[in-house]
Image (cartoon, each protein chain N blue to C red):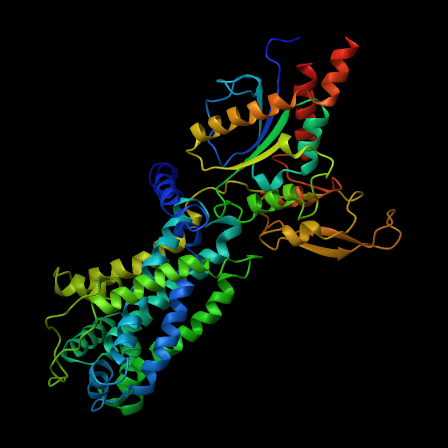
Length: 142
Length: 384
């Protein structure tokens, strides 16, 4: 097992929480190397299939961040993502996905501390859920 | 020109505070574009009721104002609401302007809302200024004379414009006549109608404009408006205008609408300098989007020809009406009838269409969705 095992994947809108100087060379949080961050221009770009892929490939959980509701730089991005995750807008998150492993946060550029706190909470929830199926399969095989 | 430090150090902290106070659902800063509309409706309604009693002639304008202010049922309330709603609208329009400027939401794909917004601002300013003239007490006459002489001093177009505003072209006399009052009223009523057309232009490139604030915020602001009108009802000068040539008086300036007159009378600016200042503001605002290099020149969403099924999801979600659905040519090798097409000039390169696409058929160059998927897979397989 590698030292910094990635447990959580965060797909982050570059206009929401400001992560400049907060990431290491692997794109993980400096403060917490088990959280891999992928930056996108707007939370509206995030396809539910991206979050599904993360879980399918063995992430313990996947979260998205967007700007504060009402303040999306491109008007509708965060609202649309929220609707997709809730299953009221196409393309939807698959109903079979464990909703407890998927989170979305709406934060402004200044709210890194709040994001850190939310990530810690998310981790304790997903830790209780245990390893996702693929990792368990791998663990038993090895 | 977009000034990033202002956003980081002023706008965002201010909004953080407002979020704590109002919660993000009712943060007035998140409805800065919708709030002026609320005041616009108040202005239309109260203005209609004021129009019932207002008589735009030299002899009757002041008495009718006196009747509205002191005798007509709810007349004073209507006048007060009309006056404070005008201030409220201008204040929220200025907040709207500053916020879209400081958050970089005014150029490139947003150029049409910005340019039409500046024209709307000028129209709103003229409507407010003519509103102060219509009161037609001694101070309002002084304001009218100052404005007319100011316009007259403009080179080339000045005399013609002043003659138009004064009604000289009808009455043939270059003094204030019945036509002057009427023509001021025509401006005061006609420009708001023009503003309705300008608002259509303002919303032209926006698929889902937010035109109304949430009900709770609406009640809060209307409550504030009624409170202001109740606590500080408007008054009218005791004197009917006796001297129609008066050019200065004890003017009770409302800086939002009469600041040019304030610059000249109270601060003693030269009329030409004041004009340069007043005209400089809209010219500078119109030039702002062009003072900076385009952030995303030549970048826009592209459709993957073979994958597009013509399902219209991206077309529905695009916030700037940049996507149109076009018919595919017959026998183009796919079994689909339509496909999406992107208008490069309107595209914001934001990626909302990517999030809407379930068929890997549209992507933006700065963040291709296959790359994102690959990075997710790669990072997780490395840690296994």
